[in-house]
Length: 261
Image (cartoon, rainbow, N blue to C red; front, top):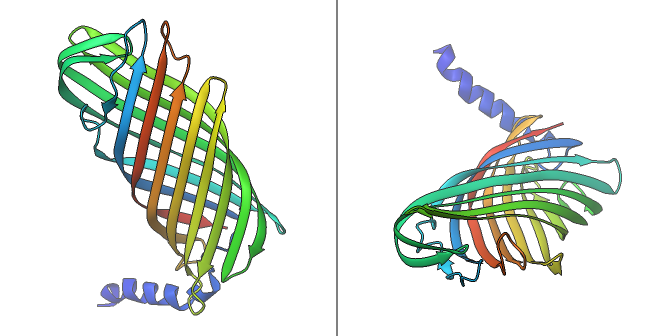
């Protein structure tokens, strides 16, 4: 009977002491999460004198829902500044029947295997304009290193758009915690940029809403929704007279843990 009561009592004890464990209060924080991401968008890759078709991800069996992985590590200084490093890794694959599909200088027919993989890592530095237990707001700058890879193969042909792109972003963060239960709070993060640099055009938006529950001093739970919109244009990918456009939307809920010190 005692063992049956142990877990409920631990949970009640955790909630009773939770008021001291402010959801957004930390010196160092680590947040791993599983992201259940849906893929949407289109890709076009022209090379070797062959104009590429504008392929929607749905047409090439890549408009799927997959589990990806995300991680963020954060640190706050006693006054004014906070720093963040993180990223995510997502990907999916499929198979479709092609009829004169042009991609990367190759023409595909019959059964074609398709895949898309994206990794996005960032560093961010923020100025804490307001950092109270109940509310907070910060503005800063970040820098992203992204790799995108879209591949088609079948019928003896294969083509891969594999590009690395680096770009700065503007960063905004905010938090709000419940007055009577500050261990439960909400956070928002936005990374945004539109620019052209080094033969690459970048339009990027990463918007995240997160609920944090910190029932224990060092460990808690996170959950929320993330929406990433990426529009990349490459003037000189691999190939002769080459050009490529990749327009992706990645969105879906995430669940994870937070360890705060």
